[in-house]
Image (cartoon, rainbow, N blue to C red; front, side):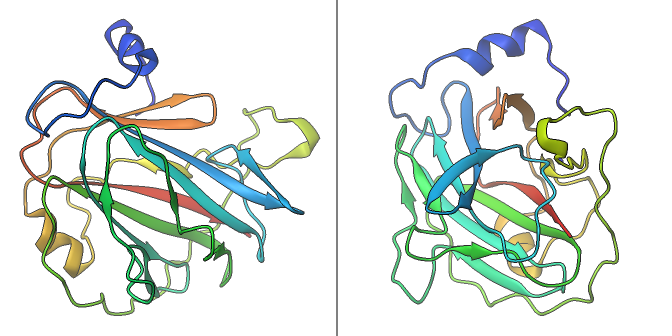
Length: 220
């Protein structure tokens, strides 16, 4: 979590962010990109790049509408962690149109650890604040291992896993209890596209409630 483009979507993928609006007007667009710390510099990387244990990464996120953002990670070991807002920092999760946000915040890095596999990062965006929910319980690890896609040619021998990156939550896939309760039983259809190394998640229909999607980080 899909990337097939049709002509109508090309306009959506290249248009500039409009002014702030409510979630019941127009086309809604969210942008996600992934950076990895290389020495003292942050570098934009391919969403499917297979990371190494100890790598430090962060997301960059922005929308063309105002709302509230909640980000939860399920590690390859089955543990959950709330990346945004972080309860220990009193972080405000109000998001404003066209403003870029870092997840986690700059002062709190996301370090890749645990057994080889996938980190599943859940993104929930809502037009209104959500009620506080209990932390999800720990689950059993999922024994899936990243694979290099030989059809994707990358410089420097990079390993890219086509199963990694953003995707829609597959229909019928169970969500963590807290997210399932927050988002309700019916989720709107979303479009997932790529602009080079930036992912675009969008909807052409009015969003009258929370939306949720996931981003898989592959690592050895």
